[in-house]
Image (cartoon, rainbow, N blue to C red; front, side, top):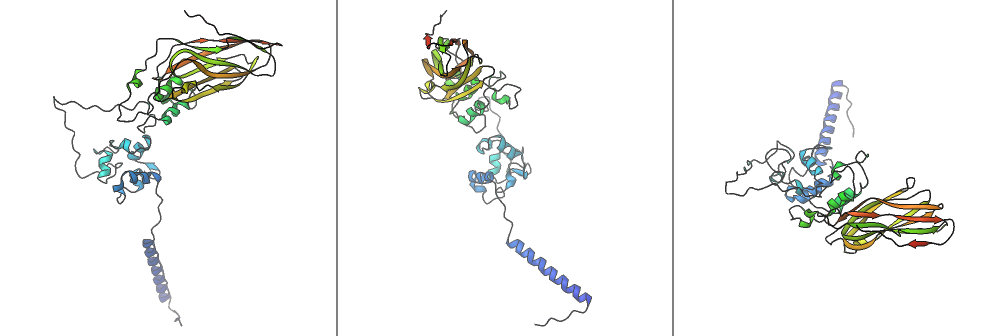
Length: 370
């Protein structure tokens, strides 16, 4: 095929322009036929799954939660702050346009855009007549720390994971200090654990609101109360026990010892708290070898009552380092029942005489009640 020569500059420019226009038209045609692929968020997938009628609507887009990615709109902020639970924010009016989020979603308008709202005006709430019973706003679910309308082990562990922290610590969260005493103790953990299983809209157990402490004082003691250990490479044990306790569901204590005479090897928790069928989780131990202290405890949750009577809480193993008289002192002891109430507790310390030679002897644990 023969192409004629183009001698005129004007003809050459005209041909070039025609080729360029054809190329641009072809690119535009291909662009219309092959739209860019857009990745969809898992949260958008969850939104459509919760509201299937939105699948073929404008709400099936990231604009339902974002003004522009990654900035959240008011609906997206409410979704995030309520544990990413759509049900929990259905009755909110995130964008303040007078319609609840659920009303907007049902009308296929954007719940996070005040300029997008249903065409039908919202139905005004009638004022109660003198003879009608006024409705009240449901109280927040006590113990629901992550806002998912359920009190479960996640909420309990949110507090338990901060056990031992004090106000001023780097990770301090005042929302977890449920008794507002400037520290996270087993009392705060049990304040959530007593509501385990509760859900929004369900009637909470009366036992959860009682928080009644028993009148009888329990005893937390070191056993044996007195012993003689030879100075050797052997390991020797003491047991921290609860005595005369009613409905024990949680506890914590600090045991102090002389680190120049004794080396704490380990702390083994007893399974006594689980004997009634409650789920038990240990706390600690937090061992400070220089100070000669160990802080430990346990909490439990479930519908069964706490344990009563006498039983072991933990066994501690020591290695003698030098001859001398060593005291075991129980400090800051706390006990709780299954309703979260505090149990009065009296502590009984122990003592061990470490001798340069000889055999192991134990004296029985004794105390006098007033």
